[in-house]
Image (tube, rainbow, N blue to C red; front, side, top):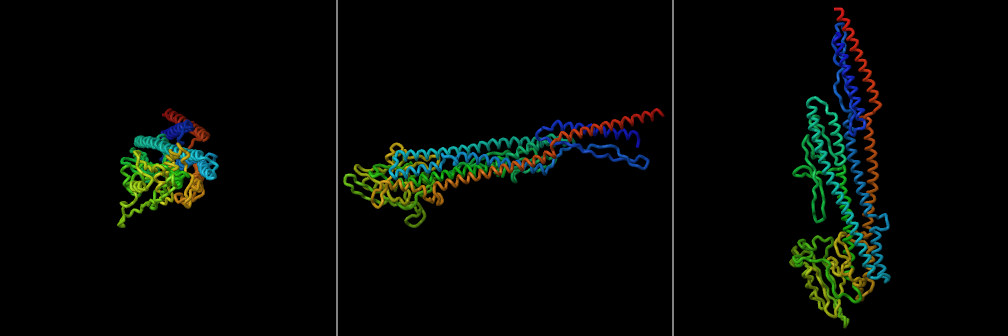
Length: 578
């Protein structure tokens, strides 16, 4: 081995040590940089050659690469855990907000309002409460239900707004990752390492995984591809931006996530967006629907009894709470084309009701049975609505009863008016058609958004009907007792449960889900923290370790300089001998 070879060996050691000092210094400088992965210098001995004395001596050291200290499998687990923890925390937050809106842990909740409402009817039956107090309690209940529904709707709108902002952020991150793919390919294509760019890309993907779960496919210098489910949203430098799709229907609005143009629906399973999408449907929409079902059943069941109730003096006029379109008046109640009634949550059935007309001066009474045919079958036995009862045929039947008249007003409401000296009352409505139309009703509206006490009762509480005809005799408190008994009656519309029982099940389901979500969120946070610590121990910068490395490379540099100095002295001796 010549002195020149020895000089080159020292030179390679000097260069490697110098680069090692630079790598250690760079690690120390970025110890607090978010997303930075510790870099290590990979060294390898250079292949030796023969010294001419039968021995092979190395030619120094070569720097193979400066690489990031990253475990890709651990990195994938961290990203998965990040997505799951974000989803769990989001679910916990949404459920906590809905639980707070329902507020069943306090004294001012819907269950308490329902109890107070039915108690007011019970007290009215016992003659210990006035009509005005019963009407006031109904107004309070209706207002409370409207407020709860409004707050639930606001919560759903907040979810939509949060998702909309999240979609925008996802598209920004996808664009950033696409640009980094291009820059990494360009940098590494000419042989230069792109470690800082790869760190930035990993950090962007991790931020993305908080919003939506993605599958990462690393194609080396070709960049990474990202998939949501089986649908690619990023391929190299090309992205398929996400969009929030809103769909309107008779049941309300629903939303979905889509990617690309034309939009293809994607269904994330975790991440904030995946959790928000799921909770909007399974919690917010479901709770609103259950509240609406409760309100619809309350409206129909109360009106079903109140419509066939009356005071001792009877009725001199009554009108339907629901305006009926002119085009719908000749269509059967059961006809799907009848827009006034087709979308109602409660429907009339075949049956009928009685109208009893009384002549005040003489006390003479006459009872007429009004049949209601809604079987969807014509007289010929074929399917059709031609022979079914329509609003117009019902009006004509009522108008034909002596002592009363029935006409549609300019506002579309059916008005029944007693002739001079007469009064009337309804009884035995097996069809429910009076309650559906809102004739002599206590409540108006169809769900929790528009439930309210009938305007006529608000203006004139004395019109509250608390009595009913029992065995041909008017019983002053029979109507009030019938309504009060609904508090403990199982209803078909509630699946055989009471109104309060059904609502309690809804509240308990939300409360149980909220408690479970909090526990899950805490558990997912612990898992993510553990994985972060594992990654930090591998990829994070330890100042003590880097200080030791710095001292090692310093000593190596000094030793390499000593070798070069020694070779230089020997060279000078050799030259002096020439």
